[in-house]
Structures are given as structure tokens and as C-alpha cells.
Image (tube, rainbow, N blue to C red; front, side, top):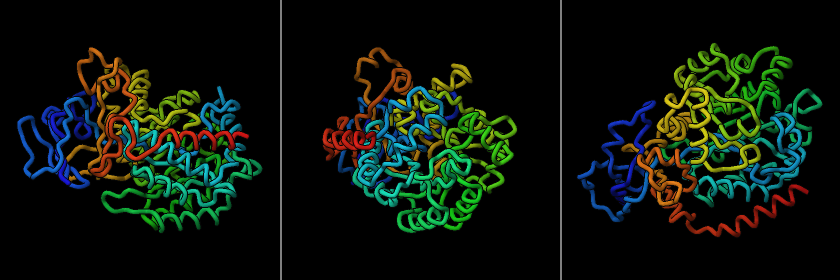
Length: 455
């Protein structure tokens, strides 16, 4: 089907440069979609060069490329605002939650994956990377469960097969009932790549390998994961330099800072993206940029846990792709990606100043920058040939009344819900509701699972 997206209020086209609009944004006043991809971008008076079967009047909408979430933990939607984990920094926060997460089963993972995917979709997100790293006895095939759940929602996904192998009895942080042997981890990584990874253009499902963090896996597992990932041509992901405690842990256990450790295990490469990336010094940022390692900025989680601020513009200037992530819903307590874009803009202004970071920067991070982190060049932009992933926002709520610039208003006035969302040319959200979904039923099922887990 050919669809004409006609006469929107504004379109964010491509990855606009820092601090300014682009001629493309001023030019674009319509989009033509053929099947699952963008066929044409039209100026004000242009009409489609092909016959269209559907015209969507977007005169009340601001149109963005589908937003891309590059770091999440879907299962953590079951432990939002968890009483025993409140008001703690990362290490004690994790220690309070590991015993709870050890009780996860496949039903819980299925419903939490569906709920997180729906929550993201309603906020304009069309692609999400989930980092699932806990595989209790009752949920050994967690990624298979996630694939099934995501297919019912219809977003794109990069599922990162996480892992924990360094128990607290060996100097790590997680308790032994939450970890697996390295042989079991690597065997399952190989299996899920073969079964689910689709490297083709327009792929709806990809797999990456993601040892959880320096304080929860062995050095050997980091090395073996990199070898397997490169053999299978998939990407690598992990948490790194999130807190001062992590830096101290690396110095104590490995004798080096996290970036030196990353290099030692063979991860200093452009097929790697890191979550958080807060506590880097100037020399480390230069090295990361030279290797083109991607970094996911998770502003809300970093603020909730008091972890610090990612140096986004310094990383970009050095050569690192920078994307955004909502992080786990037990540390950010929310899976709303358009709200996270606003948080990123505001938090980064504290470091770089109000003239140093604009709404264009934040929108670039959550679209083109995030796509680069995931190693994809078919999403993240409104451009001819790219996938037809689009998010449509109305400015008809009281928070937008009197707003001038439509694109700026999305972030400055605090957009929180998309009116329409399209993935691969198909409408997934219409009039603020996910198509063919009983949201009340999903929330009831999810709430029940959360109560069981908390017992």
C-alpha cells in the first residue's frame, strides 16, 4: 500500500546538526510510504509521483522518525518503586533486588516484555533493545519467551542475551542463585543467535551478546562472548562506568579502570555499545571515540540512582555514536521514551549550558544516534529508502497551549504520548491506543505477576 502523510505541522528529517535546524526540515511537508519504506519526501506544493491508496492528514501532528530505545530491562517493570530498593545507590539497590528477580518465571517475563513494549510504543518508540541478563531455573529460555511476546506487540527489537557468571562468593555482586555457568551461557548465546537473529534490511528481530557488567561476569566470559559475537557477526553490549563503585571494583579485581578492562577483553571496537558511560576521563573518551564505541545515555536512571552525568557531546565529538535508553523500569520506574528525550536535553544542559544542548541534539540522540549504536542504517531517519517507522504527536493538550515552534514544544512543553505510531508502514497506534490490544487486561495480568514476584 502507498500512503501519503500530508501537510504535517513539522517533520524532523534526518539527524540535524548541533544547535540548528536544517534545510531538509524546512523543506519537508509530506512523506510518501510504499509498503514498509519511505518512497518520497515532498515539499509544500509537491504531490506524490505514484498513486496512493491512503492519505493521512497530519496537519495536527509533529512527525518524528520512530524513536529508538537502546537500553532497557523489560522484566524490571515488575519491580517499579519497590519498597526495599528505594533511595539507594546502584550496588545496594541491586543487592536488594537480586533475590526478588531470582523468582522470575517465564509467564512473568512474557507479560513484563509485552507491557514494556506497549508502554514504549505508546511513547513513540518503534525499536527497542532489551538487556535480559537473569535466567533463573524457572526461566532458562527467557529470550524465546521475549521473542514471542514482542511478536504480539509488533515493535522492532534487539534482544541482548545477557549473562551473569561471577557470584558474590567469588567476589562479584550477584547471589549464586542468579548466575549461570559460562558453558551454559555461551551455548545458549549460540542457540538464540542461530534461531532469532535477522541481519537483513528492515529486520524486526536482532540478537546481541551482553555480559551484564564487570562486577557480575568473569574476564574470560567477556573474552569468549566477543569471540562468539564476531564469529556470528552480532553486536556486543554491556554496562560500563556507571558509578564510582564500579570503577573502584575494576581497580580492585582487575587492576585497571573500566576502559582499560574493556580494551583488555577485546571490546574496544565499533561493534560495541555501552550503557551509561558516565565516569570516563578525557583520555578514555578519546580512546573510545577513536574506536567508535557507542554509548547509551540513560538520564532518568542516572538521576534516580544518583550515578552522575554522561558527557554526551564530548563523546560525540570524539567519534562515539550516542543514543538514549530508558533503562530498567526499576531504576527509572518509567518506560516512556519521549519523556526520556526531554530528560536528556535538560540534564545535559546542566553540564553544557542552555545554548550548548538543544532539542535537535536530544532528538538526534534518540533517532540517528540510537540507530548507530545498534549498528543499523535502515532506521532512525526520515529519508528516502529508510524504513517507514514514524511517531506522530499532537499539540492539543493544555501543556502546549501558546507554543510557537512545534518541534521544540514537544520537549520543552513535555510531550508524553504519541497519537499515532507506524512500524514498517503499518499503523500500530491509532488515536493514542495500541491497535487490537486490551490494555486494561494486560495491566491486570502484569499487576498480578508483580504481586506474586514480590511475595
